Each structure stands twice: as C-alpha cells, then as structure tokens.
Image (cartoon, rainbow, N blue to C red; front, side):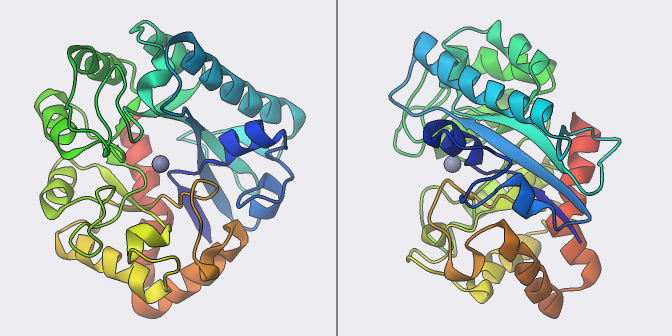
Length: 300
Ligand SMILES: [Zn+2]
C-alpha cells in the first residue's frame, strides 16, 4: 500500500508543542506512519495571520529547521526525491502555508527553494502581502503577481487551498504552470468557502493540477464528524467533472479535528480498504499515490 499526503500541520504542531516529528501523540508521527510500502508526506510550515515581516520569516525558519533536524537525527525520514521514493521510510516534502513567510521579500523565494521548499500556499485565511484568503475580499496584489512568477521560475508549486475566489481567478491570469489545491473539497457538496466550486475544479483539471481531498468534517458535510461514504461523494463529484487524474489526498492531519474513523495516520489503511470496496484498484492507487507522484515528477 502506498500513501501520498499533500498536507498536514504536524510540523508546526511539533514546534509549538516542543515534540519530535519522529515520536509524538499527534495525528502523524514518523514511527506510526511506517506502515506503508511507500509514504510521501508533505509537511507544511504554517504561519499564522498575526505574523508579518521578519516575525513570519522566523516562524518559517523554526519549522524548516525542525524538519532538517529530523533528517539528521533519523534515517526513517528522508527528503523526497521524485525519482527515488524510498520504501519503509517517510519521504518528506517541505511546503509553506501562508506566503507571509516571505516577509514581503521576493528574493526569499530563491532561498526557500534552496532550503527544500517545494510548494507554497499564497495565503492563509486572512490577508498578506500577496493576496487575500477565504476570509478576505482582496485578490492578488502586485507583489503577489511578482511572487507567482518567481515561484514558478524556482519550480515551487503554488497551492491555492486557502485562496479566495478573486485571487484564484487572478492567479489563473498569471500562472503558466499547473497549480494545486492541497487540502480542499467540493463546494457543491459542502458549501464552505474553503471548498472549490465546480468552475475552479474544472480549471484545475484543465491545467493538469491536483486536488487533495481533505478529511476535516467541516469541509465534508459541515458537521463535526463524517463517514467514509460522505467523503466518497466528494471523490465522485471530482471524477464526474473529469478529475480522475487530478485527485489526491490532503489529510489536514494536525491542522483540524478529524472524523472518528480517520483520527490519525494509522487509520489510513482502513480508508484504503473502504475505497477498494467502491472503486477499481487502479483508481484507488491513483487517488492515494499515483496522481500526486506523477504530478511531482512532471513539475518539480
Ligand atoms: Zn490549511
């Protein structure tokens, strides 16, 4: 069984709680995740909307260093290599959730790429130097447009999950490379602003991007718990819109309260088993690993 997860907040939780990524009681620990034949995990460095300038940048640094430390301490977690996904370890990708981490400086993008950042969400829910999140009305700023070009030049993939509708469509005017929504579901099934409407889903599909299905019940059915069946409705809608090759997983582990049946990484095999009861094995493989792996091979 293979598992490729486009988003978790475990890294920031470990920094805040002074715990290890390798061993902890959170939704993801490296030790508890060593149950897959191959496992790729994106770890987001999350920056709260309160942080700006050098403070935001330092929050990013603390999280990037935490991941680097884990690489040095253990051979069970390694930096992801798109051409050599290793077995029996955590293949880790560093991402940024909130472009405030740039501290308003374009030159930080090249530095981030050198430090291993492979994906960056332009915003969180509020506003920053680049754009507005789902709690804001503003679209891309001039700096945001420059940042998009610079991110693409450095092969850092753009994540639109928290971006509002205005920013999404303005990004489409500027972006030349495929982008992803790492942890968002379908608005037509669950009308939360963090979810994508059909036009957005179709646009991501047209651009050969990725959509990571989010396990947070609030984005599945608007309630505090959700079933596998309700999660499958989002998968079915994206497939109905032509997104079979764009579907992926963006758990949101350690960033949101999880459903009773999917509380932590060790429950992922139960979900895979459930998917296999309802979809062809080839499709399950695409959703849980294959699509994301192909995307990163093509776009990193
Ligand atoms: Zn998020």
